[in-house]
Image 1 (tube, each protein chain N blue to C red):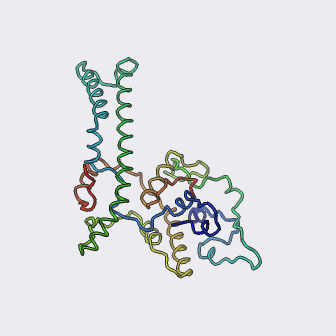
Image 2 (cartoon, rainbow over the protein chains, first blue to last red):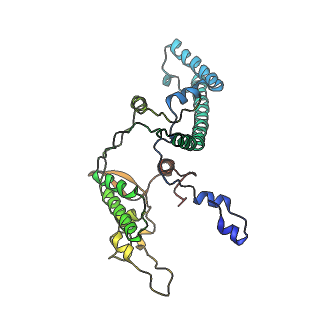
Image 3 (cartoon, rainbow over the protein chains, first blue to last red):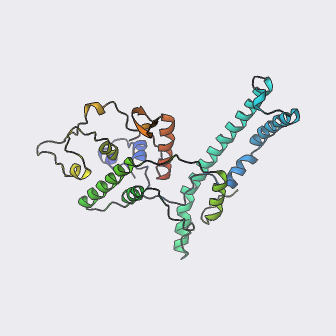
Length: 207
Length: 93
C-alpha cells in the first residue's frame, strides 16, 4: 500500500509506518503454517550442531544409568552441573533453530502459496484446500456468538457495522461473566493424531 | 477493550451501560470530540487481571494484574493467528 499522501505532499514516505499500519491481512488463512510439523521438527533434530549437543547429553544420561542414580539425586555435584549445562545448551540451540525454521516456513508460504493458488486457478484446477476440520465446539455458547460477531466482514453500511460491533461487545461482556474450569494442556500424542487427520496438500516445503 | 470496559462498568456516566448507547452518542456541533471519562477508581485498575483462589472458588481479582509473562505470549499468538505481520503485544494498540 504505497504512501500516496507522502507522495502527493512531496514528503519522504514513511515506509515502516505504512507497513505496520497495513500489516494486517484481510483474511485468516487456515492453511497458513503456525507451528512446525513433526517432520520439520525432525529436520531440526538432524542439524549437525543439534545432534552434537544431543550426543553430549546422551552420554551424560548414560552416566546416570551406569551409576544407577536418578538425576535429581546428584544435585550439588559437578556431574549435575554438567548435565544441566548440556541440557540447556541443547534445548536453547534447538529452540533457536526451530524458531528460525518457522520464520522461514512462514515467509515461504507467504511468497509461494498465492502463486500456487493463482496458477491452479488459471489452469482450471481447484484451489487446494485442507480437509475440512471439524467445526470447533465451544463450551460456552457466548464464545460462539462472540466469534460469529467478530469474524464477519464489515459491510459498507455504518448502521450495520455499529450493530455488528455492539453485538460483538455484548457477546464478549456475556463471556466475561462465564468461568471456565481449569484449562488443560494438549498432549504431544493428540498433536500427532491431529496432524495425521488433516492432510495439507497445499504447501509442502522441500525437506 | 470496549467489552472489558462495559463488563467492569467503568464509564463515569452511570447511564452508559451498553454499546448500543455508545454508538448512538453524538458529538455536539461545533466540537470535534466527546470524551468518555472513566470512573476515578478505575484509573488504577489493570485491564487484564489475574485469577485468585478464594473459599468460593476461582475468582477474578480486583486489583492484581495479569502477569506480563502470561499476557504477552497470548497476545503474540493471537496476532499470529489473525495474520498480523508484526508481533502484537499489550502496547501495540
